[in-house]
Length: 151
Image (cartoon, rainbow, N blue to C red; front, side, top):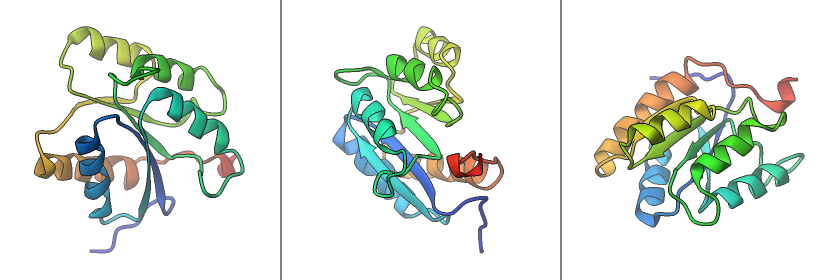
């Protein structure tokens, strides 16, 4: 099957402080049928540093999609999400909250802060493959992702 996307490769910024979870998501995207690049950071401050450095930088290109954990050191996911969505240069980047929290307050707060989706962390690599396939089908093959170069 040949898959086509609106832009190749899809650039994904993943903010995850748990090494196992970061490894699983990176490996799942490596098996994806859609060409992609995954950039890993460990906390919300690194997300914002990455975004600020992405302007005109080919080694840290502007992401097409951000996966953001809630519970991270230095700057948590809620604070990071509010900051992303408050800045004109980044607010159009879709952000998927991926958290182990099932607390309704975290879910509501994420959507109130501008999250495009809230998904539960997976229970192992097979679940991560399923999540990545779902993301791939919707965000990469159906949805149109904005790129700064499209402006």
